[in-house]
Length: 121
Image 1 (tube, helix red, strand yellow):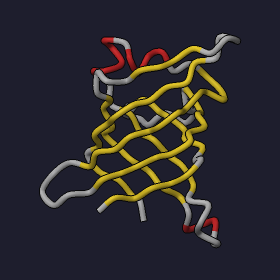
Image 2 (tube, helix red, strand yellow):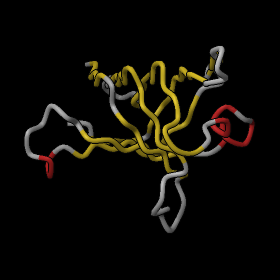
Image 3 (tube, one colour):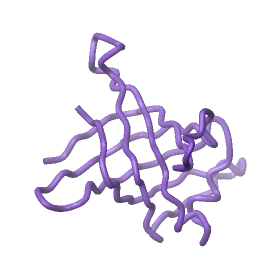
């Protein structure tokens, strides 16, 4: 089963113990896709995303590929805001994370990931 969110704002945290309270980056994406298959990890894609706050370069670095992340967002199709919170934990990015740079120097990223677990509905 595939879940799709259009234009989500995502917050990224490095997975640590104790958990971080502040995200290291907040991004706006054109699309978030998450695939769920029985007996397989969650997989997904974040398409055409850019930072609103923070720096994303670390997720495509060697150290960043070894880190695990927590990604959070709110599902704006849910009327009750208290029920709209979504989260992925144990997120790792593939080496296929890429970006383009426009004429003004703005980077737009595309990434594929796996997650150990998540609350997506």
